[in-house]
Image (cartoon, rainbow, N blue to C red; front, side, top):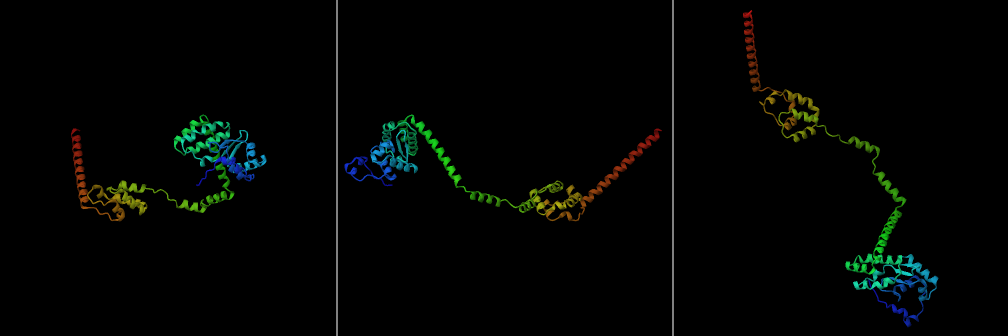
Length: 317
């Protein structure tokens, strides 16, 4: 941005005063407020009343108030008519303090401003701006204003809350009835129809019942690679053959005695071994014969024992 310096003494210069007067207008008043000799070292804050301003500009009081109202409506200035204080907003932005000594020079000018809300509002704006500068500037300003620092901070917080409320109101104002209806339609369109919901409920898979497989696993004598066997059982839906499989396992005595080869459970399932013919092995037959002989011998021994006992009783009689 480009700036030009204007000596405030221009308003008292003889040649300048001999020129045609400024006509009452908002622009003319704003230029005068920015450059008039009443300005102090404080950026945009000074004590002057409407009557004094009208007299300096050679305007009627009504013309001055009309132009002042125009500036206030655009939020360019604030005026306290009772305390006769004018504050040009954002003035500190274009009159940034160049050193801490500049801030210290504000003390005398600030003391001359009457105690009023306008003064503390301006101080709050100064604090907000100085927060973006090195900390030393803000600390120096705090020493300058003393007790007014806490009051200004309170005003700053209050104005921030008001700005947030106004922003929320603007947001609500931007929401039209059409927008609300559009949002409702979007929500409704995402709700599935009753037919789709019923279809979804029908297609919803029930949890798999693994009890038939666990029954098979508990009976199968060779327990190897259970997860793989379960995968085969589930994919090929062997639960419907559970009764056949249990019957087959109960008839395979060779497996229980360990005298015959036992396939992996996955092989048994994949190859449908429960449908195979069951053949008794020679080992099992020998074992059966041996068990029959043992039984016959035990029976014969029991008969001999009973015979001796009977003879002894006869002799005693």
